[in-house]
Length: 111
Ligand code: 5GP
Ligand code: ZN
Image (cartoon, rainbow, N blue to C red):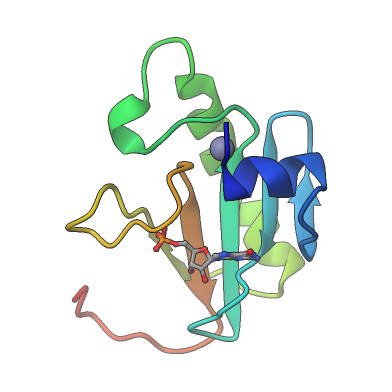
């Protein structure tokens, strides 16, 4: 399967790693929108949030268990987590991922 983020997991495409364990990988977004902009992905390929099920939801739980640590590694404890699912939401890489964004005051508006 041709997947950009699976290629980043395998090391075929380089990335700037922030955190890695046996289930997840966090790396810096190539086109950051804020001082901290990290992409967090499960090491098992899941297309998008619509593909989460009872078998693979442990990856999502693990991501959220590790988010505070991943944020702290980058010097922040206040941040926004974004997941885009599908075309209308602007998902461009079809491997489920969470954007961890911070290091700047973002205000209260979501859109
Ligand atoms: P999406 O729009 O699918 O939610 O977000 C995909 C994100 O992946 C974008 O923010 C984009 O900048 C980032 N991205 C795309 N290609 C690469 C890449 O090759 N390396 C890294 N580090 N980030 C990428
Ligand atoms: Zn993938």
